[in-house]
Image (cartoon, rainbow over the protein chains, first blue to last red):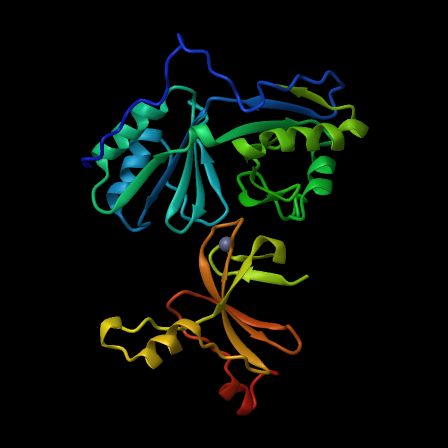
Length: 206
Length: 102
Ligand SMILES: [Zn+2]
C-alpha cells in the first residue's frame, strides 16, 4: 500500500480529447496494409523488483495475467484486451482498455508492497495496429531489427527503433503487429508510414 | 556498424540502439570530502587510453535502457564480451597475455 497521491488524468467525456494524430487525415487504400491508430488507451509504466512476490500477485489479480519475466515478451489478457510487457529486468509496460488506468493504478498500489513505482505515461505515447499481407514489407524497410518470423514469433515485443525513432514493436497474433510510438514522434511516424506504405496501397485510419 | 549483445535483452542489436559511456569500473571515492585535489581530479577527469583491451560502459539507449559493460579491442574494434553491471570481465589484458583468445 503506497501513500503516493494519485489523481485521475482522464478528464472524462465532457472534455474533448485529441489523439497525437488528430491533425492528420485518414488515408483510403486497399487491404494489403491497414494501419489503425488506437488512441487514448491506458499506458502505465510499472517498476519494481522481479522477485517481489506482491508485485507478481498484484499484476495477476488486477490485470489477470502473469507478470512476464522472460525478456522481450508480453502477455495479453484475451478477455479484457489488457497487456503486460517486459521492458527491462525491473520495468514493465501495461496497456489497458481506455479509461481503466486510474482504477488499475490504484488497485496495484493497494496490493504491492516494498519498493516500486507506477507512472501513467498515456499522454506520452500512442498505439498503432498494423495488419495485412504487406506489414512485414513495411516493417522490414523501416527498421533495422529483424522482423522475420524465425526471429519474431507471436508474443514477442522489442523496444528498438522504427524509422530511426524509438518505438516498441509487438506481435499480438499471427495477423497483427503493434507499434507503440512517442506522442512527439507520432506525426513523423505517420508521415513515414504513409510514404513507405504508398507502394502497398496503404489504408491509414486515425 | 557494430553488432552488440545486450546482456539484459539477451540478443544482438545494431550499434545505433546503443550509446558508449566511457571507461567502466570507475569507483566513486567513498568519502569525497577526504580526497586530495589530485585524487578527486583523478576520479573525475583522468581515463585510461589503452591500445588493446578496454573495458567500457555502454547503455542500451533505445532498448531496455540498462547500462552494461563491454570488453572491446581498441585496435580491431572487436567486442570480446559484454557483461552486466556488478560483474567482472572474463577477458582482460592479463588473461590474453597468458594465452587466451586474441
Ligand atoms: Zn537491452
